[in-house]
Image (spheres, rainbow, N blue to C red):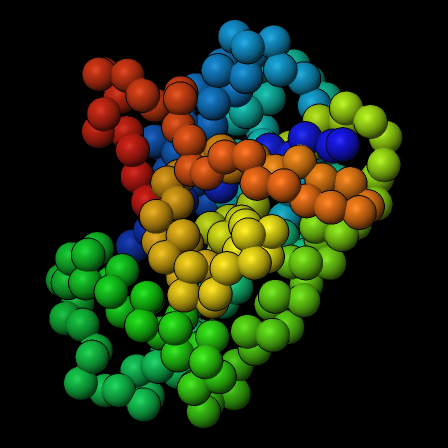
Length: 226
């Protein structure tokens, strides 16, 4: 079976004009993860990224930390994040009383995202959306199926993606309800590792949201969620 490492991108530039790039801390998180992989002598037979900038920059930081200069990762848009801003806008159109203040905390934003995603999962958002829940699920499952079809034994694959696709993939493998995907998405930490084993016939869960490269006293404040 193939061993699949699902890595959420490192910290992006939340709260800036361009979220889709890594922050300075995000670059460090990615390099630290690469150093961890190197210290464990982990090598990947294939690397797949979504097509977003933060995915490519995270992969580059991992490679730098590992001290390798591989070929460019394969790009698969199935592993792109859903448009959470559009989903929140649609939710607020129906619930204007939930609109947060401009200086609202990250915790307030997380609650808003949770409720908006749950409404999205229940097909309860009336406004036009770039992607419905069903379509998002179908493309993530399609990305998983493509990887599972590679039947070479003991193949190790690194996928650099976002919280939404990783949570949806895990939900599919665990056959969990939509609410589980919503909660997993909000728990996923930047540059965390989740793991699956898969082939063309079956998929197995092996780990969720691990951050061994940040589990050190001097990196306690480097654990982030956005």
